[in-house]
Amino acid sequence: MAKSNGKDGKLNRKDYEAHLAELHTELVKLQYWIKQEGLRVVMLFEGRDAAGKGGVIKRIVEPLNPRGATVVALGTPTERERTRWYFQRYVTHLPAAGEMVLFDRSWYNRAGVERVMGFCTDAELREFLRSCPEFERMLVRSGVTLLKYWFSVSDEEQERRFQRRSSDQKRRWKLSPMDIKSREKWVEYSKAKDEMFLHTSIEEAPWYTIESDDKRRARLNCIGHILDQVPYKDVVPGPIKLPARKKRGSYRRPPREQQLIVPDRF
Image (cartoon, rainbow, N blue to C red; front, side, top):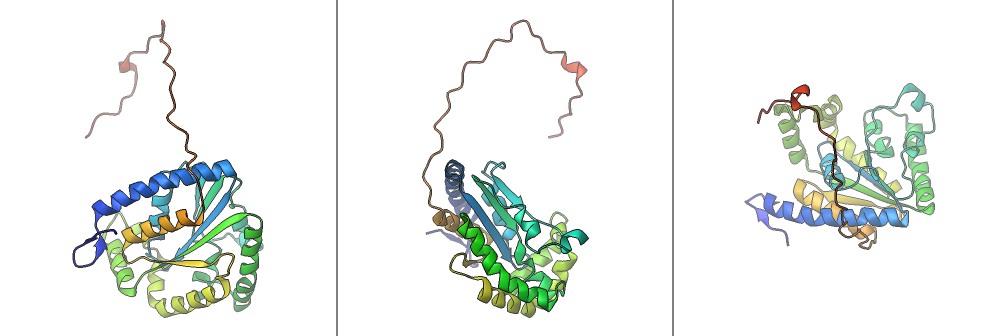
């Protein structure tokens, strides 16, 4: 059982890093298995602003080969994209055999921010809630492993994170105008999420909720759950015996004085 740190009951950094190192080893095994078996894995990460989605995505892909583990974080759709089938801009990012794709927000924007902020019509929302389950069933029938995670954060913890982002220059980019507006619509987002779950948590692709007031525990719990959902075997190649390096013969490197060397600062 993971240890806690202090009165807040949150996981201490030492235990967190030890568990994360173990999970990273398993993620590498999972990626090798996905590549060998030609699997296609899609993960969706949704939740309130500042709930910790970006943090867990970073920890998942950190030990992985980026050629087979892609993060998709789409911006505001263009005017042309708005005239296309709603799911079309997401379909183009779906994985090929041997790949996993992680969506940092996904097609569920329509049932969340677009609905709450008035960026879609009622008719567009109703069509999404009707067609999304069928779209996801099509993905699953085609062989895609679809995992959907909702990161749940309390009102108090979200506000604390917003305040930290506001006061920290390194984090300020995370606090967008849309985030600020969302602070005023806590109840509206709750209602939107409840209805979204009601229509789209289907047997083929259920929603999994991650309690994320403790970011470290949330990351570990999410990664552990992913590893449980995709059965895999250890097919990581053994140590590679490197051949002896060839002698350089008559080659001589040019003098270092001819190069622009970046000076030591640290």
